[in-house]
Image (cartoon, rainbow, N blue to C red; front, side, top):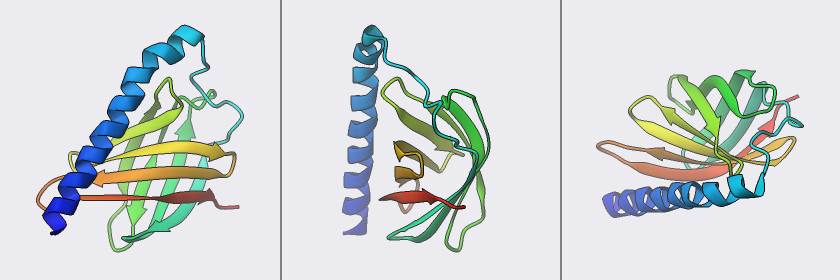
Length: 134
C-alpha cells in the first residue's frame, strides 16, 4: 500500500513540475518577473508535515530571489544541502542530493508552501507550510 502511495506521489510531483515547465514559455512571453525581490529568503523557516518537523535554513540568496542556498532537515534526519532556482512561474525548485527534490511556492513574505519528494527504496511525498522564524 505504501509503495502505491509513493508511486502516486511521484506521479503527482512529476505532473506539478511538468505544469510549471509547460507554462514557463507563457510566463516569459508575458514578461513576468522571475524573482521575488520583495521577500527576504535568508533566515530560518520551520514547519511540519506527516513526517514530523521540517526546517529550512537559507544561508544566501540572489537579490531578486531567483536562487538560494541552504540546508534542509526533517525530524530525525541529518541536515542536507539545498541549492534552489526559481522557475519563471514563481516556484523555487531544488534537488536534494540524489535522494529527494523539493518545490517551494512563496505564499507571502513570511510563508512558503512546499512539496517534498523522496526517491529510492521507500519513496515518499509530503507537502506542508514553512513559516519564517523571527
